[in-house]
Length: 272
Length: 314
Image (tube, rainbow over all chains, first blue to last red; front, side, top):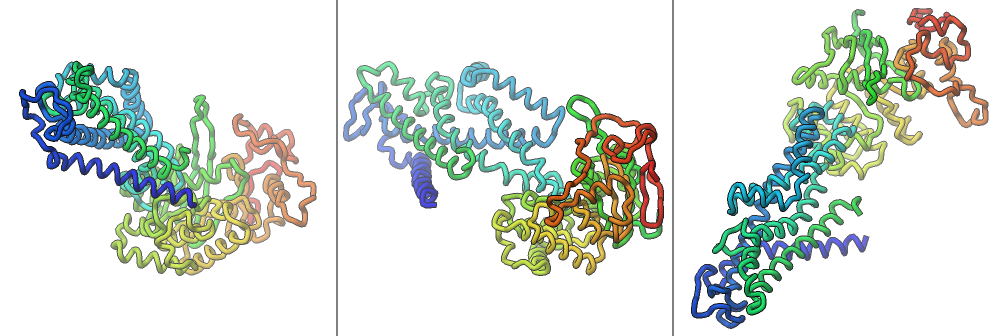
């Protein structure tokens, strides 16, 4: 009991840190001392100073301001993508789970095909076809990641839909839609939310990875991945170009991974 | 069809397809009729198709062959709106109370479901009605805000009964609704059901393997074996009137403290429903089977006023 309470308290703490991170990313532009896009050719590759707290990059832009603005882009895209994928995957998964037979088979075979590609390679291929850019990255990653949620949802739906309480719902006159919204979704939602929380870190890394490869967010828009990419050449002479964006990614991913693990422990104790 | 027969199964068959493509005949040629206010009991050992009948009547699974009538109207394999209207009048109490509740739905939410779905009342009056019903079955009305796992099995079964009664259905099917409960609570639940039945005059289809219970509450007992009705008894003393060797074997198998050490001579060969037997399906396990039993299939015939039987011996 005490241990459970302890767990809840630490979960609340991590959750508030995560929420603070998100809030900070949203209002970050207010804190930024300089314009993230303004170049200053008199102060290129400067070490951290009073004017530029984390130094400047190869065209004299303030790294601190760029990280703050980049956080908005990185986190914003991560959440947008995850919500999109979650909704898409859950709807498809419920459709597959409820309809047995041919529809189920078709959906699952499509997801098998998608899964058989290595994720990041497939994303690169799609972005390569559509052309680099934020929107295309979102499309590419949605095409890959929905399968994860669709499969998880389908399994959960199949497990739940033969329970006696579904029959009890049917004889209480609940229609298909009501069965799904009132009986099935409440009973499958917590493992899905846990999965969502666990995926925030991974999604952020994938997005940054794509930007690092030059496929995601395009310069000069600041984003942590493409900041790393641009700073790559100056690793030896001006390491702060890489250290600070890298740290930002590390800290945020760590916070959300810890949050996901804790959410799993609390919401889904059977998994332990 | 009789005058006040309100529900009838006519030559109902249900076949299931096994994974290897073979067909399992779960229900074969079953005829059941139910009069207004009557309580019929279906008994038989596990695997004989009792619960399948319940599911067929509730249309949770489709009938393969045969017809089903409710108030003279053919209700075989209904769909959509008609089915919903059918559930308004035919309800079921399931075997395991806990599994009947969605773990994420509060008791109140469970109670008001049918009244909202059938558009009988608005949400607020449904909650009020639910509270009244809970008090009627002897539960505290504060249970409405509890989750199912906070209640005991007996309490949950009372909630189920309350909701079912609240709909005022014509037919209630009880599929072994006491078998998941403690013996002390079983009696309370049965008494509650009987009391409510005398008040509201619904028909009851009771599915059980408890012959003593069957004898006490029933107007008519259907004994089932391997998906067939082998004997119909409308007697208050079944140990005297039962004729079929299978019913006798079931009666003989009743275990109590007194006869715990008695050598129970039930049929010990395992039940076998995979082969298609030409003769009487009970013949391989029947203690008094003779040659003819393996060749000729007995049909259900009326023996006397209180007993119909499918057996070559009579």
